[in-house]
Amino acid sequence: MSAKIIDGTAMAKRLRAAYTARAEALAAQGHRPGLTVVIAGDNPASRVYVRNKIKACTEAGFDSRDTEFPEDVSTATLLAEVERLNNDSKVHGILVQLPLPPQVDAEAVTAAIAPHKDVDGFHAINLGGLFGLAGDFVPCTPAGAMEMLRQEGIPIEGRHAVVIGRSNIVGKPMALLLLQAGATVTICHSKTVDLPAMTRQADILVAAVGKADFVTADMVKPGACVIDVGINRPESGPKAGKLTGDVDFAAVSQVAGWITPVPGGVGPMTIAMLLANTIKATEIALQKAAKT
Image 1 (spheres, rainbow, N blue to C red):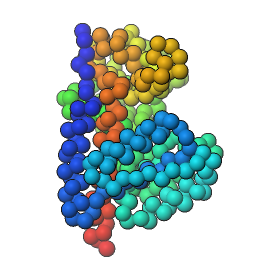
Image 2 (image 1 turned 60 degrees about the vertical axis):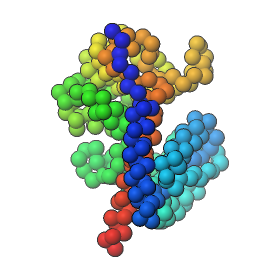
Image 3 (image 1 turned 45 degrees about the vertical axis):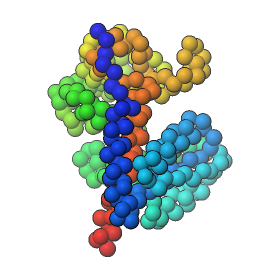
């Protein structure tokens, strides 16, 4: 068996064309979608991510920019910047690039973003939306993974989904979205006993652990859909310096029914969902303005 590769790059390109048209329509009304990314420190990966996000937003016709702070920035300084952006009517979306330097209270900074501008979907109010409560935005990476499943026509309802990883950014939101879609969901993590026995039950397997080639062929049920959320750059070995996922792609693709590559899988879809959330934030701002 050779798995079908789910091409996130091509899928995201189609979505971005639609989002560009929506952005142009808003701009024609005098409301160009505005996104500001806050980045602190000199993390090379963060700078690459921010550059890609800004580039995609600019190409879609957004007013997109970043504000940079040094490695020794204080929590107070970042809180003041977030407050300034909250009060700027031309900024519809605010994204604080993680990780922040160790001395910064990252939770406090992300919590300070106004929920209606929280296009990353990390604010407690937006995370509440995953439980059917208030909330406007879904975290971009899980949203992108779900969109891939939908567009590929992969059945979710009634299937067993296993998510490896329990972070608030990917693992938990991913599990809740799959649950909402009717899957039976198991969350696995570092304390899970006999992990391969759990993953071999999965019709849909999502790897979000941050360890290169962690998921091997013997951990995958034949014909399963494997979604690789991992982004790693090993420092040694045959893949040293190369962008690598959490899944041993070469081996697992011989067992799975569908698989996402790294790069070119979930990553481009994450950026596409950021565009979608920013457009939605702009539309929310217009609705608020119409009521005042």
